[in-house]
View 1 (tube, each protein chain N blue to C red):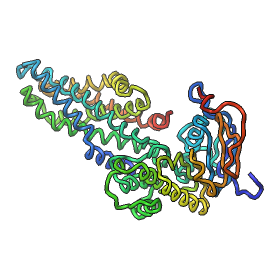
View 2 (cartoon, chains in turn cyan, red):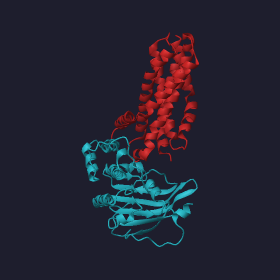
View 3 (spheres, rainbow over the protein chains, first blue to last red):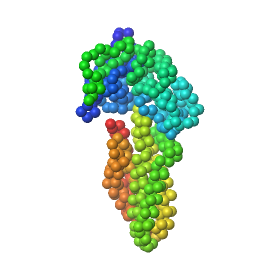
View 4 (cartoon, each protein chain N blue to C red):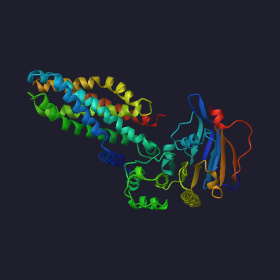
Length: 234
Length: 224
């Protein structure tokens, strides 16, 4: 964090998350200024998804603290957060519009226009009546992103948003996310396709063995000796 | 944020819509209950008097087992694509989800009972000697007892590896007082005897367990 950075929207202090005897997060400490796009990178088992799920209030920390927009309890600020997981978080039997109308109501949004607007913003047709289960993987990912954007959140937590999405669509999604960031939102993207975010991300956050090992402005993997995270997980 | 009742309503409507499209729960429940009626009718050949003695037990055991099928389906739907996480990160209250799921299950099991009761009457030549309206009261209270606990314990067991076995293991022991009240009151009404004590017991059971489930559901929903 530099002096010119805006105030941090997320502060993580010595965050530890254990699943039985396995520590997925081993003392993560970081501050993330608002209005930026962060790419969270690392090998499988590095703790990226666990970190994101902990920020989203889905995992409770074993110890340490997470403060989002000044609040320690996720429920106090959940209206300000959008979350997209690796699975779609959508009902396969319902159309995209039906899904979004349902989730909008959970946030107190009753406007059908808002649902149509976010569906269009991700490049899909709100009048598409076929169920989400019949969508292509790429369409499902985009509809999932639309669901995360529905409540116009200040903070977006996205887990592998580009997986199984064709290159053209993925680039469109990156452009949409960059525009969203330009509107002052803070975006965290866990991805294995870091190259897509080159030029769009403000910071690359590198994780290894459940820790943040480096934060870089360029997409340059830090040279660190030792074993890979996958080897450690074994 | 929408009022909790509004969220309960949209969640219930969403569940009814999903069930209408997939018919997962209702088809399996119907098939199972039908099987019980037919198999038992072949096994026994009771007189009208004997039927009145055993029908209460048969009917409620059949509905209890069939309800377990619906109860497992309710939460399985939320696990596909991890949709439950989308609810958990939203500001919607946990109890709105619980009430919607319980009401949904109540509707499914009531539909099953409405379809299966005439078959029971025909196969077992049943004729109630007591007031039939009391049977309606027992049906409503008994069904609620099954689904309120069932929905709660199904939510508890969704993250376990063998959840389809876990649900009956948790649900059946805790349902014994309710099941006893349901069977005894049904038998008493069919035989023209007083069922007031059992109906009051059932109502008390419903009240206590509904309150406990509502108090604990948020913890169960957010458990890892």
